[in-house]
Image (cartoon, rainbow, N blue to C red):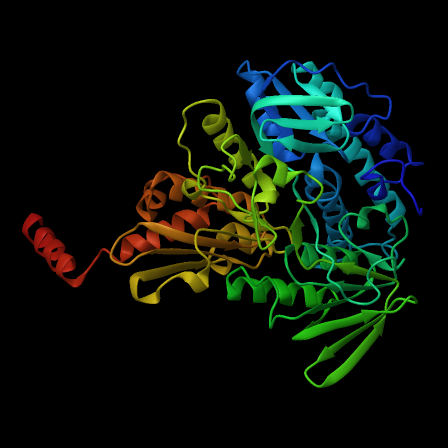
Length: 505
């Protein structure tokens, strides 16, 4: 459609019953904004994860709170990110399992059929169901004044939304981020070009899909669409995919994706996309092109900072980036920032953690710091890959020891037929955990143990002392602790033990 009835509607199929229900919950057209209070303890601009957590948390403590959202409550996570993408991934996983069940004795009478439209309808239905948690009605029931419309700062302590002027003691800037669309010919206005904002509107599987970007979003969707039957090509300027992750883990994921039929072109620079869907890129001195029914741009996200009246509020930008300190405060003493708009660690769980710091610092004399957070990340490919702590390339080999347990040595993963490993980096000469990587099924769940360990100052010795259920994938973590424990048995200690046993015999 050339025009949409409200911002964010371009992500939805408004004639679909599930998306219509979603819209009724997160951008109700009949919504009547409340009469503003004389002053709010907290005004929250942006109704994604960061804004919703800040608003609900502050209101739960008794503060007077206003929440302003111009597009869809729930933000990217609910509407165009975590929730719909995982619905697509689950459908693709089911297809893959059915088509690769022979080694487990599965016998099918014929070809495995797949209904892409039904899979997407399931996703939209679940998304609409989950949306009740983020709905305008629910947040109003929490005692929050919910305003649906464009919010703009008109001064250091005021925000205008429609005809209402909201005066505040503190405010939270939580407007999130959107897909990055570079100034390359043929990207804007091209019916074949999709971003995460428009991908989940699809009702028909594209026969040929070109994915630009081999990061988390690009990799997840490339593998899923390949499993569902698309011919998928991934191009990226880098020399490998998942550049923030352990190289061995990224290589394992790439091999799995290639086995699913994904073709990679690294060191490739996108040049243009024609109106017929032909994608042109260069690789070194070579010009390459491929015809596509759909092109997914997945090259990064840009904070939403335009049209907010930041200058009037005294909120500074530096090179287009928001300036904020370790306490989550912007250059305005009244205004804090949380979530993707901050620019680093653009994850839902990071947005949640940011907002908890903001509540303490903005409403109370708190001194919570962003730098004290331990934030893991996970990419939900198959196998999954997850990491916490400094990136592998940032660790100093001279002061770091690395321990790895391959899934080939873990009973449960052998029985499941799974590839992967757990890897921990510790401070040399101690068990102090610095960083960890998990690649394999449920990596996003297992990495939480390492995140807790780093946050609480626990070392690998604590894994060795723990009792894990057998047979589980978690046994890999205990084996990791055991491998560190064995390094404590030096030759000197062995000699002492031998003398002890000789004496006690």
